Length: 626
Ligand code: GP9
Ligand code: MN
Image (cartoon, rainbow, N blue to C red; front, side, top):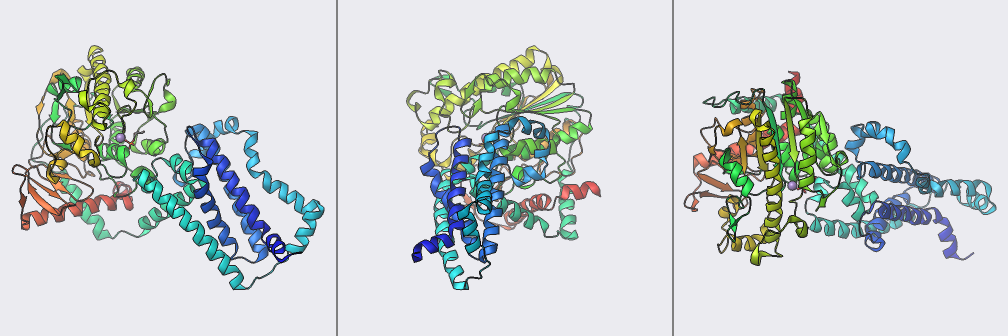
């Protein structure tokens, strides 16, 4: 027998492993793809992920190598089957936090039986067939006899092929990961759309990432936190909760609370017109009869919408990379819904998209939402962009809210005005003139549509008398127009461009609090952000407010807004960390750093660190225990 064929026979186990696992992963990719799928695009990352694993097999002796490959094949095949069934139920792939949270043993268990398909077993067919052939067929027996002896190959014969295969796989994967990071900058660090990663990098690469993220988070959380650091955090939280006045204390007690987080509602469309037509006539109307905060900033980071939900319901800063909803699933939170439950409220969250997106199905119950009406709770009778239209969402959610035992806290997250706002034909006929076809033009159409649906919903609450015994909050979750489209936005706003300070000042979202009978209406110009909503509501509903990084906006003398990247403002000056420059907001001029400003910058970094310590070391749990 030629040298080559005996070499091939010698490494047949590795060759078969690479071929069969690549085929399984490509088939899986085709099964979870819901739109356009190309085996060609997926082949490279899949093949790379498999040869990285196969390369490790060379480090074993022949017997160990076969065992290693068999076990890897079995685990990968089982994970593919699990992911397939999890996808059928959650339209997502499983993650370590999901497994740890026992999600598999939760409501899904009962449905696994009728989700599982006999064809899923095809993913383990090769293992069964090869085991039978090796034991019972003539060639199989001969191969086993000849090649199953334990041979310790010389180390060079193992190291060289290992390195060649590993480096090939790692380089191919680096290209694929960089391509995906460019396409979706937040995706790899936040893992907010796990199935997207599996679809584009292959299920094996997705699980590599999931394991890496989980381990790196666990390690950073494991380092013990000193008693001194804990005392420092507690001391800050204590002083931060003190306030000079008690305006509106208890104003919401016993009333329902409806909080509406509007997808990509940035502040610049408010009270603006295109061609004489208001972009957001309903918000403009409701702002006039509510307490309106016109210097309210979004403070989200890589966690996008989930950061806005976390900030608003926990008054803690989001993580600087990744997302809380993925990284801290094991933490304890003293969130707004939990505090409301302790006051006898029914709590419910409403969102017309996949329950597992941003791990909401795991995190919402941890925040204290007793009910989560996700995609499966609605009749998907009309879709815009990512999913259920805001019109249908508001109509269906309205009926569910009406049926809730009172008093209730309902938290609603809209969807239709989601980037890149390209489902334009469904947004109605708002004329954006020469902005037609541009991102800004499409956004204006989208937010005009969402404003219309929101207006109808609020008017319905009014008509049903719900506004008479409810506090209603509306705010935007994050920006709508990214920096790369700043020229388009400048043109729409009638300016040549934006200084760094002007651009930062644009990163506001509207926030209104409507009281029964339009009481306390007016504009509140205090500088604040999403982290301040919870303490502001805690004052109104007499909730405990000792573990919050934010301020009560009705009872703070001085504005304060801090951003995840270390920028901050007090309403008079703005420090932009990317430029490491302080600005006078009124004049727009840069100002020299002085001791006060230096201390303010120091305090900002401290507060971000305190918030990170709370998350990393689950300090809320420790504080609650003490
Ligand atoms: C999906 C929606 C969008 O559920 O919340 O999230 P985003 O992409 O804006 O973070
Ligand atoms: Mn969003």
